[in-house]
Image (cartoon, rainbow, N blue to C red; front, side, top):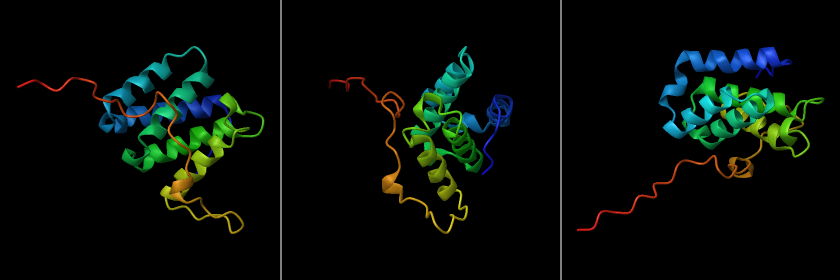
Amino acid sequence: MDIPTSHTAMREAITAYLITGAVAVLPEATRQEIIRASREASWVVGYDITVESLWAVRDDLDAAGKALLGAIAGFMAAPGNDFMGKGRSGRGLAMQRAMQRDLGETAPIDLPWPDPGEDPETEPGFGPAVDTEEPAQS
């Protein structure tokens, strides 16, 4: 998995994913969050919204989506970045490694992939929308 090394490369990767139309198969709430992320004045906040939105639906992502999720998480956690605490907390690296595992990449000999049960939880507010509509009365 290639991890971008600049904001320009990261934004190009996100844009490339969006214009492929792959995002069209994701839940509406996820698409709306990614649109909201693209309007953020802070690129870092936009990355965070995008990565957390994709993480919440990671099981529904195609290979390109998983690669993008891993790339954003890795970029956010990279030494010298630590955007939104993704490096310090270990969350970014854990997300990146989970996507590398799910994509079938070969794990480093001294650092096997984590078990799926060890993956970070979905952040509050980014999970699938819950239907709160009351059932119809008969």
